[in-house]
Image 1 (cartoon, rainbow, N blue to C red):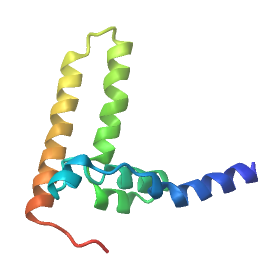
Image 2: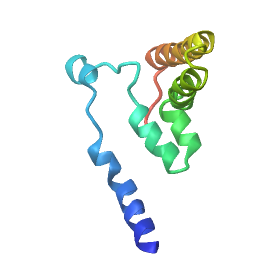
Image 3: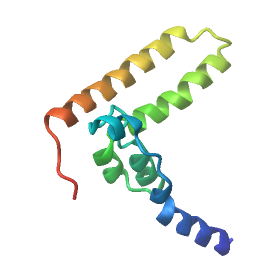
Length: 110
């Protein structure tokens, strides 16, 4: 068990070496609405919620939407259209507001 925890810890320390490059940022030089999600998710997995929210605020709402939406659709046999639409609307709004805030009020990386 200790070996597995050690291996997991070592992997988490090296995980940022395997991040995918954002094609929008690569081609245009500008962040896309999803830029920061990978690093934010890694920080959340490592238990650093403050850093996760700093890197990309919509991470937790996106994860909730990805989990609750399909689960509700499956469990209610497809009768959860309103719930899924509300989840998408709220999460989309959070992503959009966060993106505009990042574009107009950029923060310096520490």
